[in-house]
Image (cartoon, rainbow, N blue to C red; front, top):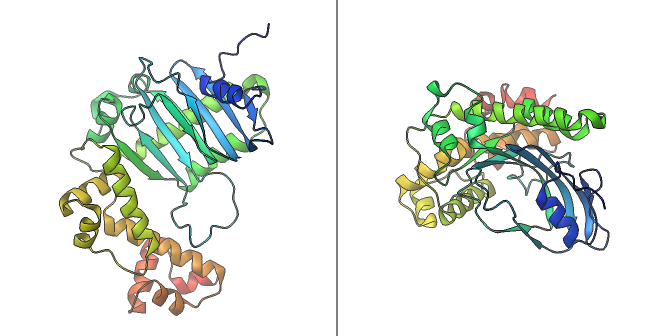
Length: 317
């Protein structure tokens, strides 16, 4: 009888059983009759585990979450849009590399939905384990609330190049099997450390518990912002669309994304401007007008503030 491998996550074993296949060396290849791609998982120790998924299924499946009733208070770090991909379509401006950081209160379902198209890295780590790794005396209110892990909180952080480099090393670095668990655990902890350092910079004085309806609403408003980058947001109008007071909308948006609605909108507006200029299909004037600027000098100043150089210079790279 084949000995059970304790370093393979139970959810991976359950998915393999559901698909009528087996996990081979911590890696599950999706059978062709169900789709394509792979899913690989690692239980580093009782406090931290990771699942790397990059696959397409022909239909959604549902897997029993055997870890749902664990006594551990696991925090979830979900990395999205971090796999190598073709040039980003302009219609998918929200597909920027990012990571969702959630307390266990956000993810309490007994059943996990495995969606048809998944390209993520999920790292789960016990909040108590993290609390023992660094000095507890000088934490921001946000980090204190996150590590207490007693309330439903969700934060999103954009992936900057140094974080993406660590992810790329995890996905592509050729590692001897003897060192695989050690190497990946160190990289996973480095990612988490850097993300906590970023969250610690946020100036939230007080956090508000979230529910699934609030989260869905804030993400719907975010999608509206990104869909119409040529139209500056009007808070009162967005609040009506959200069914929230302007104060609540601004408060929850900043809590999740770490930025005000207008600053978040402006950041993505400039990312879109940079993308359009890189394509070299439009002049600087075309891009400015396309994104709703009537004053091209103002567009140039805003672009330089976000990208680090004037749009004319950038277009010549």
